[in-house]
Image 1 (tube, rainbow, N blue to C red):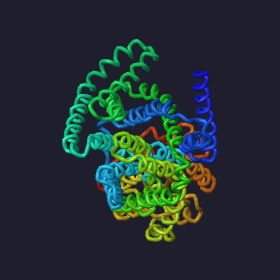
Image 2 (image 1 turned 90 degrees about the vertical axis):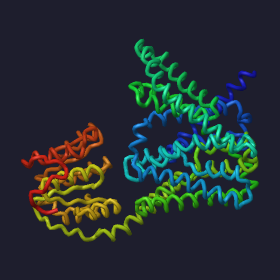
Image 3 (image 1 turned 45 degrees about the horizontal axis):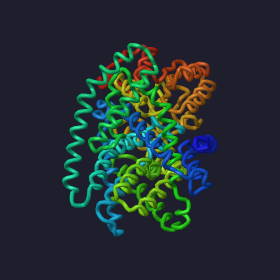
Length: 554
């Protein structure tokens, strides 16, 4: 009967996960939210189907370990070194300023320094899992807004390890905080050097003979051994297993085994991370919400509003426009999954009182539930702000001096800018349109004829004199929009040569069927390939970027 009892708990958890995630995905709220709600429903304060959380909590925490490992796989040291300084600076500023602001509020509320610092660090972080999933579902990972949000989350993930070290050090007692911080810092430096230095050499030699025998089961076993082994080394050094796993991921990211390791870990990561979120959901004390409804509501609003305002202001300082800044603030306003790890460790070490910690965990859980709705609000608000900003960059007045023989570029991001640079160097006149006012303002400041406009609208096509243009170049991110524009333009102007950027080979075939003259999938260096193909058809040489112009406008 004992074994049957555990089996029944497993069945309840799996059933709740399936029902919760399917319902959440059908409502377009994301799988993480489904896990959280499922956990809250079956947990001790919900229907009470699961009473003992300890049976699942230890296993669920491995989900965080594997999450940090997979993050490390996406963050080789070279990638960190070349990260854009302004975006990296925005991420670092967000963590430091938000943590300091929340800690300051906690001090004003009467909390001692140690718990105030821990609470500030824990609540400053956002949810990597739920935010990246939302961006992926909306197809915005590659947009400027999506790249900025992703970079901030990466910086936050890097900040988890120092925060964990601080929590451990603070748990050693008020009298030993300086010594504990110094010792923990020394251990961390030694462990990092050992793992990065020795591990870089050892891992390559360990994986080579295992990979040579081509046994997938042993390869999977070695991968798990590396993750848990490095996690154990980090834990013995006073850090967290998650941080050790993160370092292991960074090391393997530089090897030829990276993709196979990722394939091995992905199913385990997904399953255990889902279990982690269910456990988090079960930890949300619904009874506590009813008892402290006003306090929790106040803290929730303060957290979401405060983080939104701080990040939006910082984003403006770092050069983002109002619409993007507001969206960044809203989509990253929630607490993160690592708040449960940090606050849980702080409560276990006696740094944060259990009552305060439980209240804050409820607030973080509710903030995760609110994230999809905040993301939708940010998208709608950004549309209104972009419409207002568009008036400042000439939405209604596209006045181009080119009546014929010019090239029209739709989309002036990285790819469109690369095409424009080559055309400019060759002295070929062009005019471009985009829907990002910030991008337009930067381009016009550099002297490029870029205007606000939706290329799919007939009045914009007329204003750009597409009917007498030399060619039309489409560099848009949205595959469906690109297909719609190709179909429309090729039907109205069958003689116009359309050069288009495609998402993949299937999308490329669709655009060719719709009439596009040349299609370049994204796997190719899209901007240069489009420009080269375009000017080859014109009989023009392909100059280097920055070559002197040979005449012509633009």
